[in-house]
Length: 171
Image 1 (cartoon, rainbow, N blue to C red):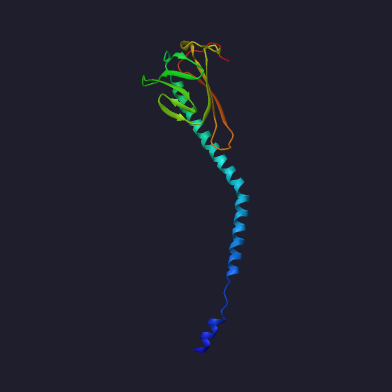
Image 2: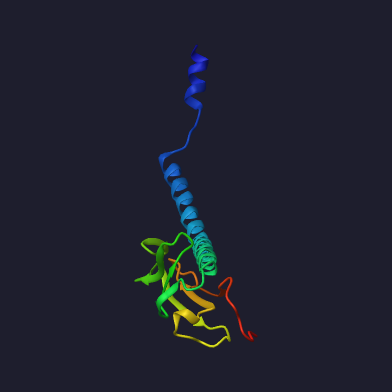
């Protein structure tokens, strides 16, 4: 019995100083790793934000394009402007696309946020810019959105030809 008690007393462990030093060393290594990895994490976050914003802008463009393309003759307007497009949709419901602050709306529905600019340009059947709603045959939409964070802004432009409209000498 006496021999087993001596064996227990001879087992050596870590001293308090050794434990504190090893915890300190692990903490310093963790802080160094975090400092080195932080720019990579920020770049990943920015790329993800830009990708999400780009997808949102493309969705908004696709929806706008399909709806504007399907406008029946005489259903655009009555007034047109470079920042607002009023039209009657396929369900005979009057609606519009407009920018309020940094939010793009389709009627009263929020379509896209973080929009920095929206511009509509209207063209007649000869390709000339027109201000008369009855003469509109093509609509050019230019949209810029700025994702949150340090990601670069997304700028897109599309030309939408209205279906079932006549075009003269379009080039």
